[in-house]
Length: 463
Image 1 (cartoon, rainbow, N blue to C red):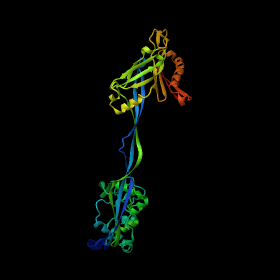
Image 2 (image 1 turned 180 degrees about the horizontal axis):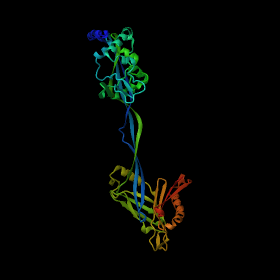
Image 3 (image 1 turned 60 degrees about the horizontal axis):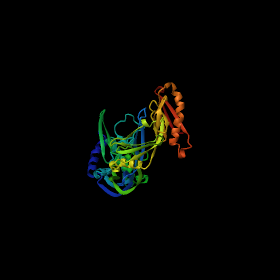
Image 4 (image 1 turned 45 degrees about the vertical axis):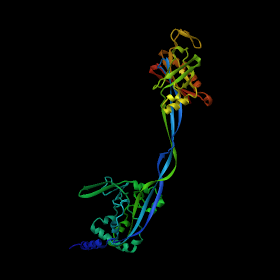
């Protein structure tokens, strides 16, 4: 004997075809708009640039026969920026249907293409919707797998659900909310995968998330009024709740629903000030330009050119050696013979022009005097009878730090040399940096012994 449900189903199906959801009444439209910050872009104003030139000094290896002087600099560019804004809008179109199988009114009354989608797939968590069994399923069933929803999995279950819900749809359907506890996925399908496993068909879909991101731009109060729930509201509006399962099936009565028409965001005319963007680059200024080196204690004053495409001028110091390890002096930068116009790069020209405005204090390591000569007066050289067992090979003052490298020619006297050189290195540091507000600060000296005692490297900074 056939099941009574099986006998009634064909008749009910015919009735549904003739009158299911036959009356669909528009119940008004609400439009929600929001303005939110979008892209930060540079303004039309050119960037403001600041230039910090700095001379570079390098000695010729361990002999100090020559010193090479050039010009480096830092260029800081500050670009003004502004915050731009976009406006997004969502239309909430509400409907009421009445008749046999009233929920079918939402199927016959097809919405426009740019509406949020509702596919009804079970929510697996972490923004994933799929009928695919999880490899690591959660301890609770995913939303969409509740009892009332599972009861409608087959035709007989759906029929039973419809019978139970019909009195409710007739008496209270017209007073139910337009919103349902079904998650929205967005307008556009990104990918879809169908899998058959053990005779069962599984579906997994992924949707682009731009529309859900737009919903999040609205305030919480507005989102409650909109009622387009997503997985972001799963804690307060889980998908396919028990009550919602009943609202989806009725033989006769009222049914309410709504569509959400989403409009692509449009940029508004509003802008606001944003933090400026600062970038700093280091640059070596190539020639042509000239450098004037003055060492008063040696009566030395020479000018050397930095050739085009090169980045340093060479000064020979061998004939100026007077027995001292170093000499203090100044450097001036001079324009090339053709004037500043000969420097074609704007940033190089700006650095050179600033560097030309002042004298730069420098400390230059000196070579040992030629053998067989000794000092008899300032700048004068005569016979020398002894040679020191060490040579200061480089002196590099930079950014409040002095680095001095000493080459030891007699390693049996390395520690004796260290005791002799340390006071000299401290004096060099204080003459170079202990001025103005730094005059009372104490310095800290570190000595590194390299190459098995053949090289001593001193680093001096303020404590």
